[in-house]
Image 1 (cartoon, rainbow, N blue to C red):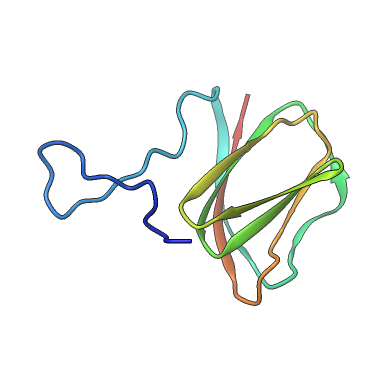
Image 2: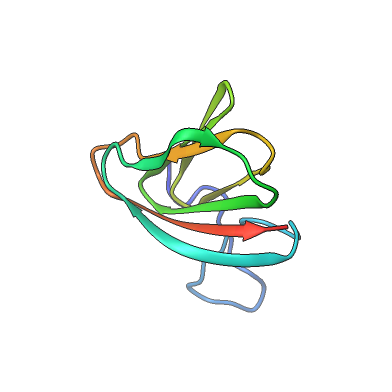
Length: 105
């Protein structure tokens, strides 16, 4: 997978690539940057809550476990997890994964 898939140069910009990761997905509650070591993540047991998570992978990969489904997101990708769906997030690689986690309602 090419890390720059989906990137474009906006009008009136030079030597500038951008990729829209998300649109309006609710009111931001908080956000954090996370460094997940290989096989790191959590919580160990799937959990739920009232707010949603918007995960954005900066580098590496993240495996999101959603009830009985798994989703891999790669660098420069985003994924919205509905809080009412049991979930956890893990680093399935041998490198550190860097990601943003934004809580939204």
